Length: 106
Image 1 (cartoon, rainbow, N blue to C red):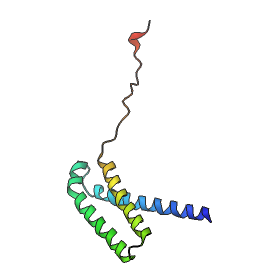
Image 2 (cartoon, one colour):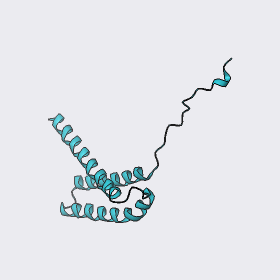
Image 3 (cartoon, rainbow, N blue to C red):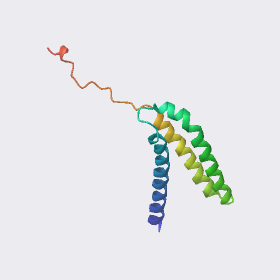
Image 4 (cartoon, rainbow, N blue to C red):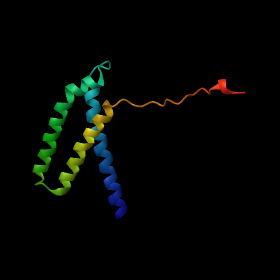
């Protein structure tokens, strides 16, 4: 029984992550590839987060403010914020030197 609960929760978490990630990716895919990510963020993030807030609040009210629903939609909200931040933040490349310093050899 415990294994089924763990599998169920894992499925719900992965499905939620995938849906939120795809919704953010669709915003970026709808623009030209040459458009800067920060420009897309400044243009679309306010509308995205307002719509997400309204949707989350509507579901919380529709389910009579059950604690599990509040926890779930709070997680969705913060997950969306985290994914937007990760999408905007530039990735760090490895800056390790691939070439050995041969000038110090005897």
